[in-house]
Length: 93
Image 1 (tube, rainbow, N blue to C red):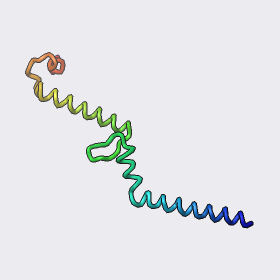
Image 2 (image 1 turned 135 degrees about the horizontal axis):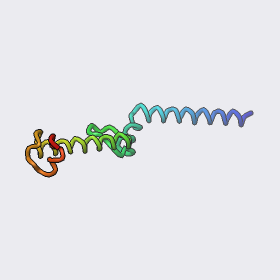
Image 3 (image 1 turned 30 degrees about the horizontal axis):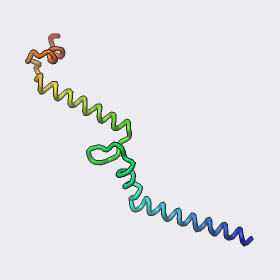
Image 4 (image 1 turned 90 degrees about the horizontal axis):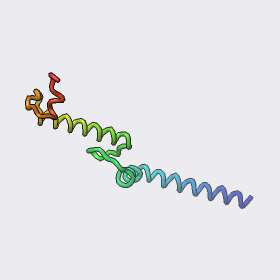
């Protein structure tokens, strides 16, 4: 019976230590800090972590915005330059 009490006591001490470390880990923000500064592979412009899907969506959106900007600044909204890369988008074609 003495051994059983020791095992239960050791388990209780281990559980208390585990609970305390977990509480400190979450309460002090250590978990979030490690997630952002160590394990985060992609961040947005404010520093939040992005999943791979969110990152690829952001890259695609940025590429589309850049392409539209290039098209409108080079060709103009009326597409009047007559350049070959603008003619494909000309309203009369």
